[in-house]
Amino acid sequence: MRFKLTFVANEEAAEMRLREFLHLKGISKRTLTATKYDGGLLLVNGIERDVRHVLKSGDEVTILFPLEQPSIGLHATEGPLTILYEDDALIIIDKPPGQSTIPSRDHPDGTVANFVAGKFARDCLPATVHVVTRLDRDTSGIICIAKNRHIHHLLSQQMIHDGFHKQYIAIVEGHVDRSNFMIDAPIGRKEGSIIERMVRDDGQLARTEINVVNRFTVEGQQLTKVALVLLTGRTHQIRVHMQWAGHPLAGDDLYGGKLSLIGRQALHCAAIEFSHPLTGERVRFESDVPLDMSSLIFSRII
Image (cartoon, rainbow, N blue to C red; front, side, top):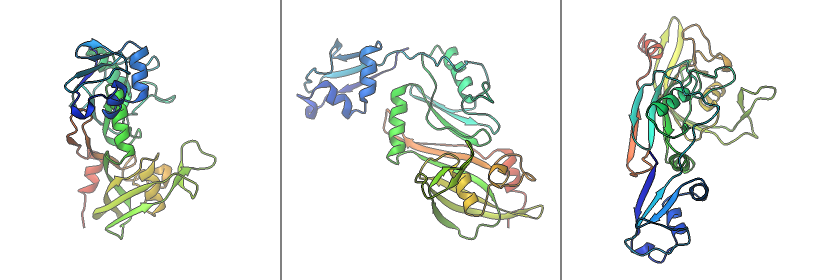
């Protein structure tokens, strides 16, 4: 089924060209170009018009988006998905640890994107998988996926303008002294590595808010449960910032954490909040911490 949006031109839109009106409604120039050349339609009161058409108050404007083609390189496969929410615009997934978000050379199949593509095919939805938020393979929690490029664009704009919030729970090594603080330290690629990042003066702006939830000890190892809010979205941001602060994530051996208590970085995306791209309503989705982390958290709280 073709995705479409309908708007009604108010008095302020009278004498406005269709192109300008749609721009005010968040339709990007790229989307308009694709609509024009890739099989979409612009309708005013049910009649096809071009972007230079001048509107009148009360006109009903409909944009029929072109049908999307599933990504050729993404294999649509059947697999389990924990769906927290779904509508015509987006789908919210709760990802377990150990599953990649998108295919890679080492993990070409069995990813969230593969399974979502399989669901789209089963539902006869002509769309590719637009991953709005992604998580590392060993990070658990919430992923947001858009069902078309326009919704992806709108959500990406919210991220740029601080309207899209992501909250994480982590278990870090040691007892963190400060209860509430922010790390403001730029992050860049570590020299000689294509994977690791590090705090470096010439890196990209990176800010993380940290709030201590509780401090505890397990098998003689001091640990702290922290709640974190990403104010920017750099690769491995939480892992790098906590290592830099002297408190690497438990299980994160890439950044100095020990594997004795948990076999992966103890990091979980517990909540996301944003304005729904179609209704404008603020929505929030939450996910419980998985068993491997919760068993540590409740072992012994002091």
